[in-house]
Length: 148
Image (cartoon, rainbow, N blue to C red; front, side):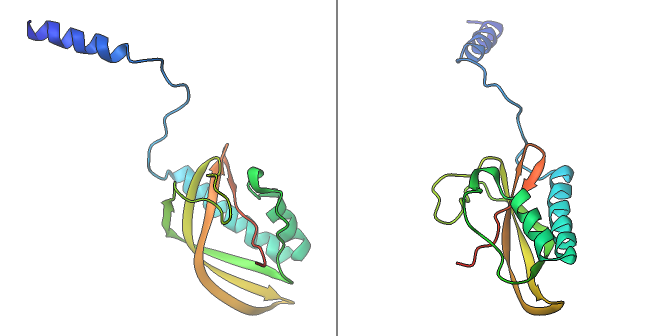
């Protein structure tokens, strides 16, 4: 068999390997748009906190991942300030929310954050940790903090 015949046979075999998959391929990297969506999520969170408890709770409800809105999570008294370290932003495709076996729809990212609780204008606590953000249909979603 000639080299051209082998090449042609391989091409035919590859194109005949089942139906194509619909959808758009996504690179396994974080894009500038992804970074912008995450940064905007935290900016909105802090701006809402500056407007008070009610505004921040409303934003948390609006940005709660659509598949996880059944939980009864509210902030303890006060607001939170969340400052991400964007250089730590990375994909986390295997993460699932605590107590849940299903992976959330969307692209799961994790970033290191400094979280500060503010009550009546005074900082009452600060903690460094990580926060998961899910990008779904061009919007950043989170998981509202729970007291437990």
